[in-house]
Image 1 (cartoon, rainbow, N blue to C red):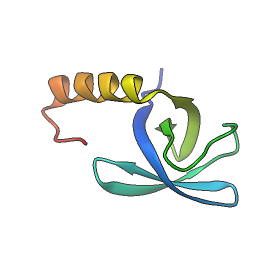
Image 2 (image 1 turned 135 degrees about the horizontal axis):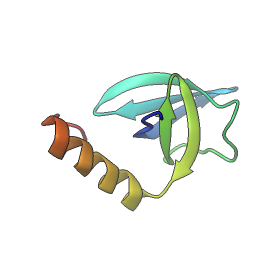
Image 3 (image 1 turned 90 degrees about the horizontal axis):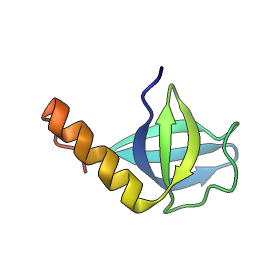
Length: 74
């Protein structure tokens, strides 16, 4: 089982997205995700965008992560 972490797409360049997770920027491959646009919330794992998710789902997932890890994640 893997843990996909939600983030927000802030930039697209070819087949790569720049994803903000807690204010930290990560480059992620778009090879397995479709129809990703700037401003979308996505699940990211191991350098890949896995899928687009809703803002509500991103918030809910981040809240669970905060509860279990005491991390400060936007």
